[in-house]
Image (cartoon, rainbow, N blue to C red; front, side):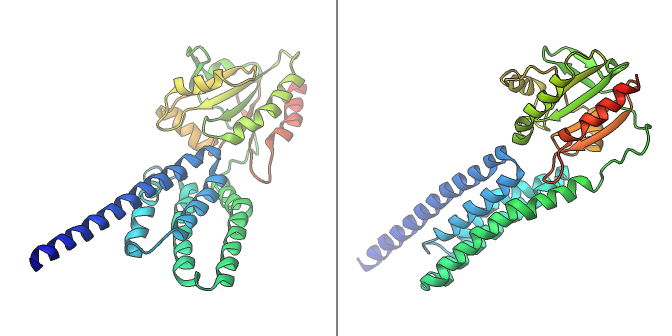
Length: 307
């Protein structure tokens, strides 16, 4: 009888532990899904959201399972996925976001397990962390992105950078090559469907385009770039939903196009201006400190005056 009761009690404990782990796994899936999908709002905001949600996850720890198990279940999916992308595709801009998941969860667990009894320090620590998130999102992370994307920045000291012959399609999915750009000044605005800043900058691009609307010697194109795991049709579908009357072109990920993107368009939005011979005379990318849409007006007028 005692053996039977012991086995029943042990079975109940094991079942309860399994149910607790299952709840934490479900919780982990939700946290990781929120963190991944937050990339839609841009890299800066994603980093901040990851810092926040994993921190809250640490504060919600209740000691029902070992803290190490809790930590590994929550952080492993997101951290391993981003580490894989960083190593496989060389996406160095994702490093802070990957590390943020660990920092957020560790700090939340530390406060919850070590400082909860001290209400004053508990609140001070939470306030400090919120201030830290604000600093990272608005200062530290943008500076890191600027460093990563600008370290191989192209400086155009002369007109020897000729645009390679890219294979693109128009809004009707009809093939077109960059050879069609000859004999006109061309302004290209490179964007992607996952770049919220690109869409926000479109009104500025539209304003510049309208300024030269009656000039037949210049053409403006919004060039949508397909991501590594995205087809052209998805980018075209997104463009058709946008409220702008642009001439759209779309750049797939073949070998030649990918080389051009990695060399000239390390981030989006990027503006490239070509002269009548197809030479690149300007490259500018939007950063915290730089807005190429304010710079190209002078460049365009200089090129048109040379005609």
